[in-house]
Each structure stands twice: as C-alpha cells, then as structure tokens.
Image (cartoon, rainbow, N blue to C red):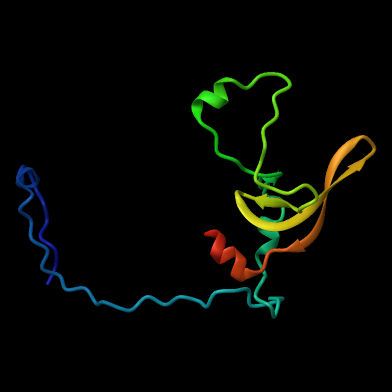
Length: 128
C-alpha cells in the first residue's frame, strides 16, 4: 500500500490517511566509554571537569543572634561564635563540609592548613 497523495485543497482538512505499514526495529546503541585508550578506573572523562571553578570557604564558627543584637553591631563589636579557640575550622567546597584545618599566617596573609578530610559517614550526617 502507498501513502495517499494530497492534491488541491485536500490538505486543508488534514484528513489524509497513511496506510503504508512501517517496519519497527529496536534502536542499537554503542556501549559507554571510549573503545581505545579508556582508563581501567572508568575516569576517562574527568579531565573535562578539572577546570570547573568551585567556591571554597572556610568557616571559623557559627552563632545565632536576635535582630536587636544584629542591629546593635558596629565597628569594634565582637561576635562570639560557638567554637573553642584553637579548634579546627571547617573547609567547605560548594557549601559542603569536606575537611577541617587550622588557620595559619603566610607572608601577612591568612591561610588554612588541612588537618583531616571528612569521612563519607560524616558527609552523610552533614546532609551532603
């Protein structure tokens, strides 16, 4: 059977019927990964992400304050945080805790020396 041809004004009604039967075949996909030179670890595309910038922040501590106390803040005010002096600071990448470290001074600049990386169990507890 063949498709019915549209002639004249027949296309305005869009009532053309297609009676030709089509053969349906399953789609064939190639397996993921590179065929030649693929790394055994499965990290063959990690190089695409190596130059993606992520925000890194160091959190000295946290506290909760009332709006009244916040409005009273000014130059010279001290904000007490819930962290003991000398306790490691949190290192966050993209807002997620990944490590803890200590504050150091290098050529009049502050820095952070990483003391330990956060375990996967701690990441789960942190809500990662």
